[in-house]
Amino acid sequence: MKRVLSLLLAGIFVTCAQYAMAQKAEDAIKYRQGVFKVIGWNFGSMAAMAKGKKPYDAEEFARNAEIVAFMSKLPLEGFTPGSETGDTKAKPEIWLEMDDFKAKLDKMQQEVTALEKVARTGNFDAAKDQLGEAGQACKACHDKYRNK
Figure (tube, rainbow, N blue to C red):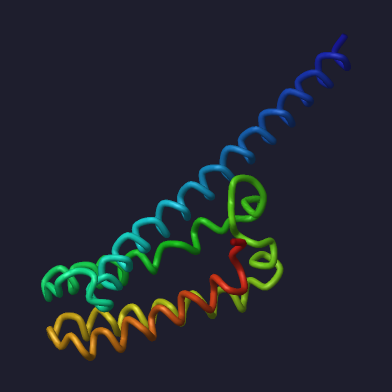
């Protein structure tokens, strides 16, 4: 009886642990998707101004850049082991090439931090140029590590 009870409890613990891991993976996916959604929203606003689809507003542009710079520091936490499967566009190569992935994230952080600084000056031409650099840094990661 003790053996059966021990096996039953062990099975319950394993099942609970697997469920908890699955929940954590889903949470990680939702977390990083949320972070990238905020980045994309703010990037989109700046891009619309840069393309002339929206009137340039120096304060709004600077605020968008500040938000993107802050949010750029957050995604890595969402790329936990086990979160490479599920409802995600992240390619499994991220977890196999984590050093390169981190380097690309670092580059993006550098470029959006520079964008934030330039945006604060109100120099629209310089901000547009730096927005392009930041966009290229984002694209480098998307091209290699994101499914369409």
